[in-house]
Image (cartoon, rainbow, N blue to C red; front, top):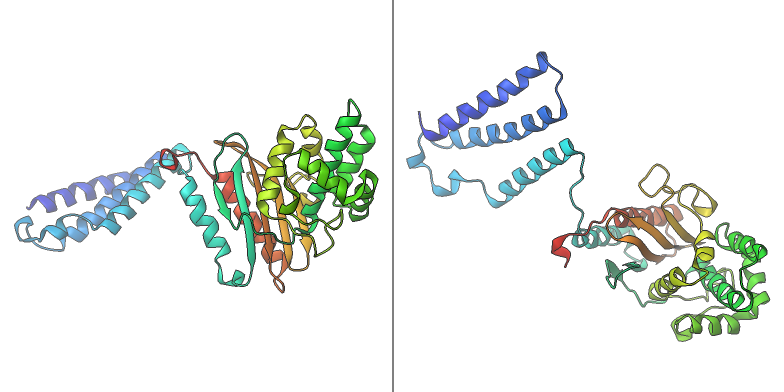
Amino acid sequence: MSILQRRRSKFEQFALGLSSLDSFVPFTKVGRAIARVAALFTVFGTALGQAAPSQADVPRSLLAPSLSEAIQITTAVAEAVSQVSGVEPKFCSHRLVLAIDKIIENPRFETAQWGIVVEPIAEPTVLYQHNRDRALIPASNTKLLTTAAAINLISDRVPEIPVSLHQRLIEVNRHSNNSEADALLRHIGGQHRVNQELMRLGLRPESYIQVDGSGLSRSNRIPPSTLIALLKTMERHREGVVFYNSLPIAGVNGTLRNRFQNTRLHGKLHGKTGTLRGVRALSGYLDNADYGTIAFSILVNQPGQSGQVLNQAIDQIVLRTAQVNRCNSDS
């Protein structure tokens, strides 16, 4: 009996022994995982055993798996082990880039204009960016400019943000009340006042165009980089918690109450939606196990496309972002 045949016989006996356990004892996760690993070696050994009667006559290329076969075997083993331990495989940032690219490069989005930026709050790291400085129609993400300016203005005038403003901000951001947003803009002094306040927050007025408080106008233009800068600045603002708490919570309330339910982001994402015909947006903060709070801004303009399709793509991007891990290869 050749060496390969003896190896094959041992692996087959091992696999058969494991499978027979099922008729005597409960088949645990560990048992199932080991059986799958053993089965891989059994199949591999069988394939080699059928290739030639002896090792001496087998070309070297047939004595070891090809690169693609080796990768498949390694991946299968890793997945089996991870299922036993209950730990998902690492989803490193380079995989996040590939995953998001795959979503936005789908043929159905051939005519779409995407603007995306994903950055952790606590470090100068860019996890993903695509057209970060392209000014797009933001729909109700315009409300973020209005509310941030109002908070910055009022916080300088009074020692504490009044409850009435808290309630008004919730109405504007969480429930996306357009008339309240336009009224708030007029109340604080119009677009000129917004520009002044946002300049004090470090934003450049020339980086965006705002013509109303609500975002109903298609003349509004904001790049995702400006929204990210705003989100990061407001996270550090002394009244930042007021801004944060005014945003809808995924799967819980406001315009996000029906999104991300029963996912890892249920209750762990605060974000502002944006909705116009052919326009969808979502910008805000999400919790990530490795990176802490991540600021993200996703804008897409595609006339004629279903709003449901656009929202589903945005949600896939955000869910992928929540999954990303810090890996040694990322540095």
